[in-house]
Length: 354
Ligand SMILES: Nc1ncnc2c1ncn2[C@@H]1O[C@H](COP(=O)(O)OP(=O)(O)O)[C@@H](O)[C@H]1O
Ligand SMILES: [Mg+2]
Image (cartoon, rainbow, N blue to C red; front, top):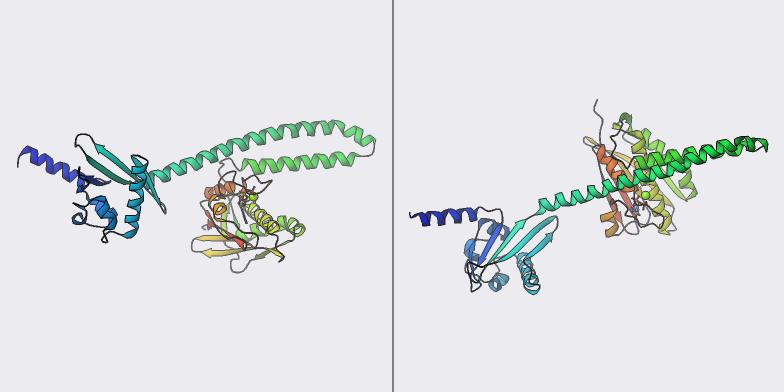
């Protein structure tokens, strides 16, 4: 074999094994080369492709219908806008399609297609983390800014105390101080948890945690015309290893969102928030279901995004922080909702071992 021929065979073998799909069109617009990845992607054979023009490909029954309509769309798009690259997005998959006119081969055109789903995933995760990091910084700044004036108010109230006492109103200062302390606690608890702190875990039966949350939320629920029901059935003493404060905040957030959804629904029927627990192999599931207004597809897609809110006075922080806390516990959260009917959140947490 001549050196030239050897090289030719080597190049062709390399092209055959590329991880991108390749179609080379000659100057008449017919395919003169394709590789294994492309035949795999199109679920067809080299014999079908070689010698075909794009027009023929669009009509060839041996190629899957949805592929053909993709090809028509992409070709139109690339030709009309004279663009060289195109991103095709299918459920969970991203393809990058590139068209190159080869100068050295006058009139030849190379079309490559590459699966870039993995890069996209990395890009999206980086983007989400960036947003969360920003949220953490803003939260820390707000916490700092609010706590300073509170400290000043606290100091001045203490100074005023003797005067209040003189007019028989010492009780007022006690109330103000207690309320300031409470506000401070809430800020610290709520905003600190948006920083990526490591949970301080203790091992407790999950039902105790839910009982506490029900107790904390019950009076607000009553005022807002909702009933919280907690069925303890089945799982009595299954334990989880959690940061109790953080996880309480998570469930309280979800219960409060449920109350909001119920109040906004404008329904006649009584508002119900059902909390329940389920065993799921190595995981324990906390299920929070409401019969509120439900969500549309956009909300369902974005509700865990920092700052995403549909409420006039919402912050959009609750669910993004909750998701992070749950992830820090090695768990996950999922949601299912039907517009007008209600919503169900499921938190899965690993059971404590031993
Ligand atoms: N139980 C629910 N029912 C309907 N929509 C909900 C529910 N929980 C959350 N959402 C939607 O998700 C959005 C984000 O929630 P969240 O992060 O807690 O922020 P906020 O409560 O401040 O709006 C809400 O504005 C709402 O549109
Ligand atoms: Mg909320």
